[in-house]
Length: 413
Image (tube, rainbow, N blue to C red; front, side, top):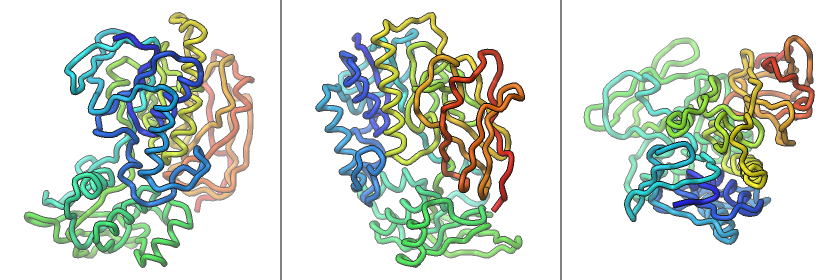
């Protein structure tokens, strides 16, 4: 099967990229998604708060997912569910498996929008026994909203970022009492409104500077050992544990395609518009920046779709390098997106940076070979949340040296 564009992943980012591709003049655009329905994780989030940045509406997760599916279909996008790309037969040729069997799909442009996943307990090296009752947020949402299975009675949530508060709401819908959110950082990392609603409205405390020292139980979780700020340990009686956040990108297809992987994000290295180190392959959404809220991922994916459509209109020159200059960060910054740059090809898309610590009034400096390109004063930086700086310095790059983004000043909170 031959198409103009193949989008791998039918979440908000993939659907936004596909919609922008069609609006930009691409002919046949196919989206493949391994789930029964397109729309991604928001389908399983019954709470509100979706769509503010991209659709200019405040919607529940299922309604938000439906809106993006409707937009894509209205543009003429072909959405194929229960279908997944398992590998590459050749550059630009995907091995696809779906209800109708296996086929090879040849695409002039490919957009990877495979998303990110939370690291489970085993990957976090949490000791103890191996009972049932341990979830990630994604598994919990599938358990409650897709399979409609009972969860438990008392739960401890590991993490205090955006997705952790989503886990609180899912537990509440399942009739489970959330005992507390546990974070090893000094304070929560989500929006203050969410924190107030959960701590005061739902009376779920946040135990800061606290870590999980062990999970125990025979058949089912019966207690969790937590270590507090002073190193003291205590046992908490729960039958459910939800590990939230700590996202890693689903980068397997990117690796199989031979794309360069960024050391900070662990996703495909990308320039403006999601261009990767292989001509004709683009990346969008949380496979690039693990992990943003759905509306942020969708909004940035529209830049990717427009860039891919422009590349197709220009004939898809396989010999043109997509990005030549690395964009690096210095501690305490964790990663930057875009993390590759081309001195000529850039967009108005803001640059995202993320810190591993709380910083008050940091000054962020962009340099190349010791030459200062830009400097920005931010109000604050919060771990597990991205912060934007302009990309107006992009046009002043030299083609032969990497760029470094660092924090010149700021008070650690």
